Length: 636
Figure 1 (cartoon, one colour):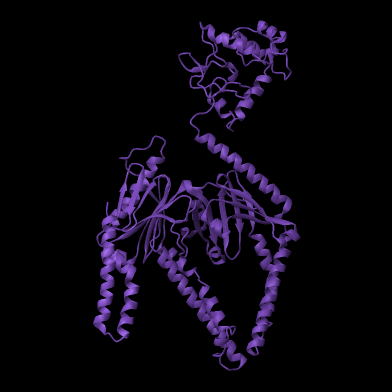
Figure 2: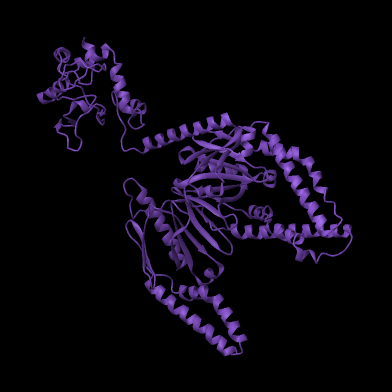
């Protein structure tokens, strides 16, 4: 399959438009005149166009049975085969110009990294949508246990959330970009000598009034910029569910569409600020392994639901991860003094800076005015403490941090990669620590993992240990649920299967312990049963702890008509001997009299070759039909 033909001039202009403009003005200013400048620009465009024609002819992509193949390159050829299983997201984006000429960009993101694995630029919007849906359908079919049906229709799409005009207006109204304020305030503060020369030589009152007006203007401009960016980013936002994927669409000037695979979700984050909390709204962000949907350094790019009522946000979050209703445990109350000391120190630095500015500019300004903020230090410290905490749920860790920008993070136990106990120099003086649950998400690079901050060292160590235990338990539960079969014990009923130990080889040890603790009544029952029935769909659990068999060679097996039993009885807890076959009985007797035979009490019963009288008496007393796993001491 090929790219869209209209992508040739668009790619050419996209690459050399800036060069053509600069070259035109340079040539025109040298005195060669307009014709020479236009000719130089046209020559550059022709070269770029010729290259893009070659690129178009040599770019191909194909959907095979298992991979998406991309072949590209004019001078240096590159061929990529991307398995459907590794494709985590297919992003489709269209800017205003791209929508006008009818093209779209397709970016393929894979698990394990935040960079783009493959890009197809550009195809028609219909082809981009078809490619996105086809990759998602084949990925779902490839993940199915039976391989899926390649001709089956895709999953039904169910709408979960669509932003309303009122909510879109709130997104803009509650958005604020303070970077412009910081930049201009620094430039106009007098700290820069060049700027300070332009400050008017007026009275202190007039200068203060000008500063207040300038601050208000900066605030309004920053608010307007943040509102415009948020409005354009989340215009027409829509979130839906299709099978095991969450699909989203958003954007005014540049339209985005993509998917969030639920099986790759690492962390859910519900965030708000005082204004949102007062109005009852919040934001939901979803972080996946190595990739955040729509990321690229844009404002609010990780938001899955830009704004909705807090109840609706938590409802959507629980549809993805049912984490229950958290009840947070806060840090110790004494830690509020630490926060108060920190804020007081910050105010002291601010007063010092104001004094330095006043001394340098020689303006009679009240540099001591920031000291009035000391009255706000105690409530600020209390609010910081109040909005911190953690909660250990049945299957999730939930943490909460921040007041002005509060984040509630939900992490499933099985998604935790590492549990970190960190203590700064100041935390060690207060005998507190921070426990961080590290995941495989991209936000780990920015230090925004779920964290229980400023808890007593003893409690932090207990939390770290508890998270480790719950991680292992969650992994065992997932492995047992994903296994191809489960052990059937006793009479093979479902209740017995649920009680079976699923943790690796632990089941083998459990069976051995049960054999050692079996009473005489059970041994008599086994001896009386001359033809034990095997479970219909069960298997015989092997015990390899005392085996001397060479497993590099295939085992000799006895065909019983229903299932095969290893002829080496020392490798099985229960030996099954069909009626009329003496070979199985001989195998049982040989196991009891072999070299190094032991009666299970941990004492060597034999002589130099391990064939003492005790072993022989035991074989003589044992019922020939008794399973070899029974303890010989039960007949003594």
